Amino acid sequence: MTEKKEAGIRPDFEKSGGLVTTIAQDAETGTVLMLAYMNEESYQETLRTGRAVYFSRSRQKLWRKGEESGNVQLVKEIFIDCDQDAILLKVEQIGKAACHEGYQSCFFRKLTPEGVEIVGQRIFDPAEVYKKK
Image (cartoon, rainbow, N blue to C red):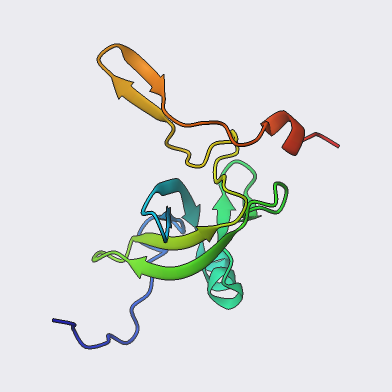
């Protein structure tokens, strides 16, 4: 049974110091592609443009997914968790790779009793895609 629509529900950016954990998931396959962060500005731009925009903690600026690699994420659905402190984006991954290391998913390392196993195939060579100018 579907609940009625709730007005005013949005991520609570103040709860966690201005950044909300955001998961990108392939809308078609359900594969978890990556984990990133959004601030209010990146969230609003994502809503406005329909393309995933995150906040880069290392660069301290907006990160428009695919701005360098061309591997953009088109947002199909947005979910906000019950505590309003996490976002799930269901996306269409353009370019087949979400990970800056060239894999479909950033979760390409699997922990096994024998150690860490690489479970994905590299789709692109990061040294070629992210050539320093």
